[in-house]
Every structure is written in structure tokens, then in C-alpha cells.
Image (tube, rainbow, N blue to C red; front, side, top):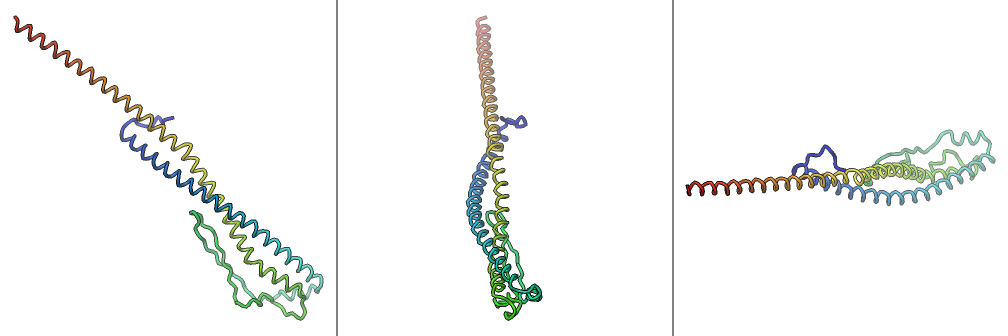
Length: 225
């Protein structure tokens, strides 16, 4: 239904047509963006599911090795083994833009490049099960960070999809129909005004012709007298 605030003028008609063209173009772009976001979101969800299974399996393996190592080693020796870590890990966070969504990117950096520095103890008093547990955790750390990155990305993309969906619906069900209704209303009013003007002009013309005809008759009568 047309808004009662719209003035039925040609300037307003031009304005509403421009508004409709912009809304239609924006609707198409947002719809394409929503579809592409959905495609990438579903791909990321599948990757996230596979990665989560891998991380959970790695953590379960590391926990099992720790349980076995704890059972075969005195508690005091186990505590001393982890008292002074040799390796230091830092995480750098950055972002990458995916369809106007800033996706986090985590980069792992270690203090040294020696892979054996993950072991903060000597091998004489510890069991191989403890070595396996430490190695499992070190191997799974990049995947854990990647999983955190993917899950955060899925949350951000889901939020952006919802925002885009609301905008698409607002354009499709509110703005575009409203602009179309306004254009129809203004066009009908302008046509009605034009027809009224034509009728008035025709009446004025008829009156002028009639007055002219009467004027000629009067002049003819005076000439006869």
C-alpha cells in the first residue's frame, strides 16, 4: 500500500524510481553475498567437524599416555619433570577478510626451532609413555589453534549470514514493495490529474468556441440592422 506521506509529483516519482532501482540492485547483491556466505559457511563447518574429531582423538591419545606414564612413575619424579619447561610458545593473532567478515588467523611461534625442546626433562628417569604424551600434545597444538580459528570463523559467519538475511528480507518484503506501491500511486494520481486537466481544457475550448459563435451571431445581427 502506498505511503500517505508521498506527494504525487513528477519529482517524487523520479525519486521513488531511483529508490526502487537502488533497492533492487542492493537486493541482488545482498542475496548473492548471502548465498556465497552460506556456501563458504557449510564448507567451513565440514572442515571444522573433521578437525574437531582429529583434535579430540589426539587429546584422548595424549591423556591415555599421561595416565599410563603416571601409573608407572612416582608422582615426585613426574612433578620434577615438568618443573622447568625448555620451550616457549607464543601466538600471534591477525585477521583475513572473507565476504566483509574479519576471520581470525592464529600463528604459532616457538622460542627455539629445535623440536626436542618440547621435552623439559631427561630421559633417564622418565618413561616412553610420558614422551609419547608430550609429543602428542605438541603435535595437536597447531590443530587445536586451527580448530579455535575455524569455530570462531563459523560463529562470525553465522552472525553475518543472519544480518544479511534480515537485510534481504527487509528489501524484498518492505522497501521494494513500498517503492512499487508508491510509484503506482503517484502514476495513477498524475494520470488522473492529466485527464482532469484535459477535460478542463476541452471545456474551456468549448466555451471559447461557443462564445466566439455567439459573438459572430451578434455581429451579424447588428450588421443587418
